[in-house]
Image 1 (cartoon, rainbow, N blue to C red):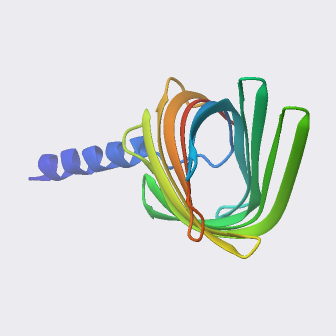
Image 2: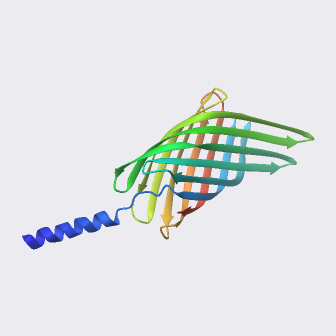
Image 3: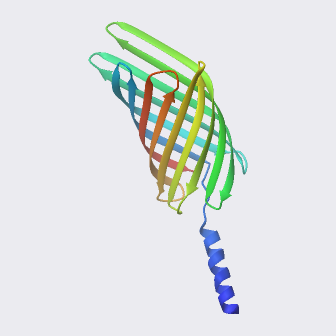
Length: 200
């Protein structure tokens, strides 16, 4: 009996030792493929994204996210830039899973040119979000987040999911999807991303 109890204790201790929580000190560089669907048609944009966060303490972090995509066709060009930055609170709900909430400043900029005419516009707002990150294994992370965003008095829902495979504790690659849905505009923005992550 004593040997069985000792073996059980060793197994439990070993499992606890291999449990891994998400690392909030990270930088992602992404290639983005974005489809924008409006009432007059659909266009495909591509570009890049930068995303990162840094832990301030055991539960608080700062984060930033920047996306820049563009399209050139038939002598015309269009650019879309999205910026989000703020602070968040995260809490472990298990040995390998964190729930988190964020507050952010949001910026959206659109510009285009064609036929000798150019135009641009930009608006600033705020965002509130909740999400989860979970290390399903020591090598595989799954995450998701939903944000309420308000820009120029427009209510917007932004949702994203992503998965990362870790080759080491510091290096990983991932795939992600994000949807952006304004409530009062006939506009859908869907983005697929392939990312390289460095955790530190």
